[in-house]
Length: 200
Image 1 (cartoon, rainbow, N blue to C red):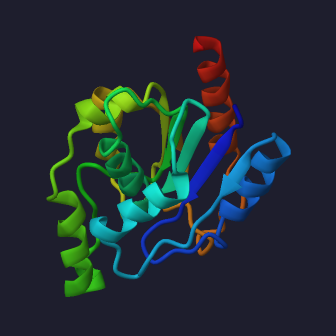
Image 2 (cartoon, rainbow, N blue to C red):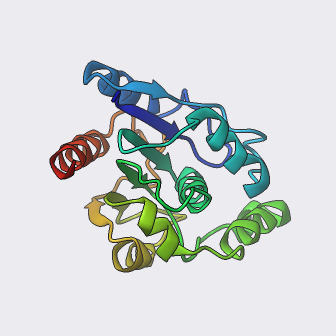
């Protein structure tokens, strides 16, 4: 089977920003087929159009299917996994600045941003079902992220079984913050592949 990686950008993001193009290049060097979609209406992300988009690009998911998400892209990945048929398992996922619990400093962004925040955080998630499709995952956080507080790591660790990595002073892992490469994300994907191959 051929290794595939899907890199899902965040809220108001694009596949061309920050560390995403670097990771795409590095994964291609490792023999991955890499897909970095433009998510629909990225300034106003919604579950009802982001999750079908991921389904469309992935097609049939299997144990050689890997995901990397940034911020809202992490929410989109777990919600996509929640829709998979009972016996389907993917190879793994890397969540960068992902949130399952709460966000901070969204009120300052205005009313529409608060609506988007509520839309994602108040729509229920069955993490037990998601974990049944996701044997291994890594969640990467920054200790000074202005939007994703550190307590988000609890649900990733306790309910999804994610390995937690904390980076120092990386903000929200954005290009504005100077993040053009993210070696910890590459390392995490490669470890997931090794783990997936050894369990087959």
